[in-house]
Length: 94
Figure 1 (cartoon, rainbow, N blue to C red):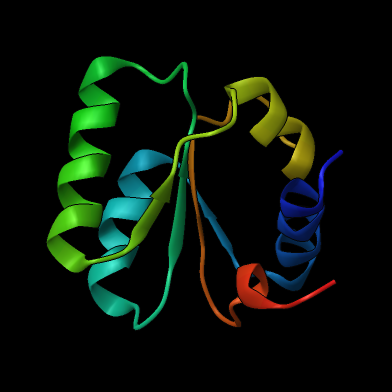
Figure 2: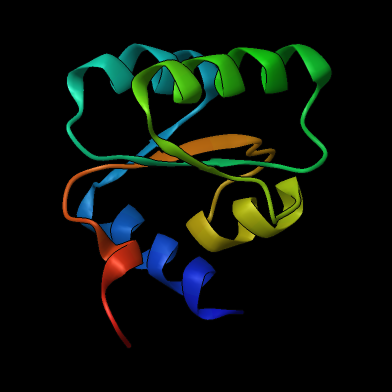
């Protein structure tokens, strides 16, 4: 597992991950910092909604991983969208 996905696993254990398109969309306006992960294989409707919201609120949207990779990283099934909130683990050096 690469470093980014490993950090997602750590963030999940800390409670700093929001899972699912609806919850991510509801959470973004309340965040100062967030990194959104959108699976490459997410549905077109989900992609449009998430990309519109991340652009509107100015958050980074990472689209480098498949649903399978994101699901494995956080220990859940069928994950297509998640947001890393709280402490920004993505900026920490390893």
